[in-house]
Picture (cartoon, rainbow, N blue to C red):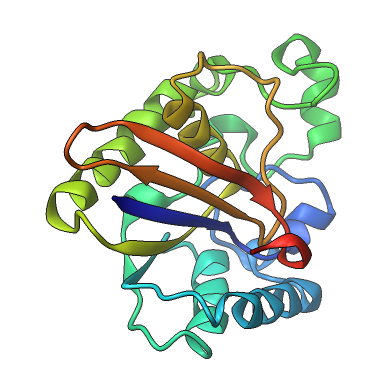
Length: 208
């Protein structure tokens, strides 16, 4: 069984300001002091878990989170562009308030999540496009590293769409994105290709 523990990066200033980050890599998308503390706390939580590899998105907020983790987890990090956050197109750098006011029909009224195909309409990526990109990376890991436990540092919408893919669920905005430095565990059986979602969006205080 290939097991993946997906970690969303720590809090950024853009998270605090409710700005769509997407693939932006600016000072506003770097970790806050609280975000760095979250990453350090997560590292302590995960120190007893035996990981074979750690692979991260190359965006700076993910790199910062990875750096905190590898202070405690003795692994040399790898980076892969396919683990980046979704491309938010024209909405990148804009606030949720401004975008949702203009494009109210593009968001679920309860979860406030963007609907599956809306980002593609503004030059970004649909849920399916994200799943294809990251799904390719997943498939490679299962073939090359079939029995490994891999720690993956990535992003909210990316992890959410992978959770839906793992469940074979239709694209939906009903599932909220995972919280900063939460852990989501997925497993894939290399022999059968069956996918399992062990848990989703588990905070450091509840991780076992």
